Image 1 (cartoon, chains in turn orange, yellow):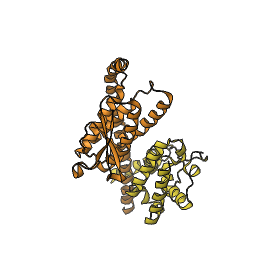
Image 2: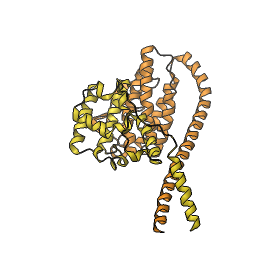
Image 3: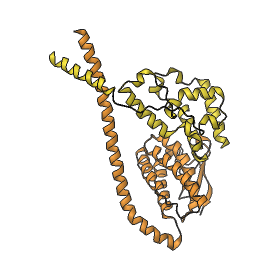
Image 4: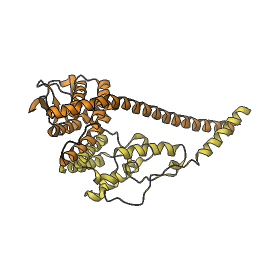
Amino acid sequence: MKILKTTTEILAMAFLALTVMSCKDIKKENSNTKGSHSEMNHNNSDGHHNSDKKEMVMDNNQDDDAVMILNDYFNLKNALVSDDEAKAKEYGGVLKQSISKLDISKYNKQEQEELSDIIEDAVEHAEHISESPMPHQREHFKILSKDIIDMVAITGTTTKLYEQFCPMYDGGSAWLSMSNEVKNPYYGNKMLKCGKVQREIN
Amino acid sequence: MKIVKIIALVLLVALVGIQFVPTTRNQSNTVLETDFMLVNNVPETVQKKLEVSCYDCHSNNTQYPWYNKVQPIAWFLEDHIKEGKAELNFNEWDSLSNRRKKSKLRSIIKQIESGEMPLDSYTLIHKDAKFSKKEMNEIINFITILKDSL
């Protein structure tokens, strides 16, 4: 009898393990379908966007995709400034989408190579930010900022940007801002004013 | 009591049954030219440690102990390896651009320093995968120098 009981216990545990495994798969599937769904929505709205963009590019030669990326980057930066992990996650996800949609076809070959390299790297960091706790988000934001700064060097910007620098975080870290007032995304409320403007980008 | 017996039997059959579900093993005989050890001048101690602690999930070759061939453990493991390789595959190191390499090296340092890698669930069984203080310093020093040289 005792043997039967032990066997049953072992089998029950095995069964439980299996159930947990299959649950995990289902969950993954769900999030996958969700992911592609929101992507589709995104694409739809972007359909309009693209046609708008073409006109704008012809008009004044600005890269609307890059403007979108910067916009999402600043949302993410502001979330980190205000120590808002949930928002940073959300904007990390949004930024991932907009970076991967950057149209590089109008740049020359060398620029295209560098941009696709930047995109690949930045997408990964944005993805990590979308699924990590705040200290991790900030680590990835540092490298992401470097990617975005390098991107702007190629795409240019219509609005004036400020490259700011905090010497304390991880041996010195930079980020971009629309305003020359320093609000530190690496420390948030803990050391909001740490840093200085080190470059103006026009 | 009869019901218990039946349930036990059903579960036993299921457990045996899933052993026959084929899984893809992460194993390869070729060493790619892009391997981290081939393109970098890695000190022997660091090389050994990386192979023992990282290569099971971050390369095309996993050393499988027998229990990792038993279902459902094998499935659980397959998932882990897939995720690990997507994040970083030491065998394909040199196919990355310098920007990506720097990015990866930085992450390696952060992950090891914070103790997040190797995973606890891995070191639980692979005791030799754990880093001693000395080994950690050695590896982080090497990776830092490599990162700064790029």
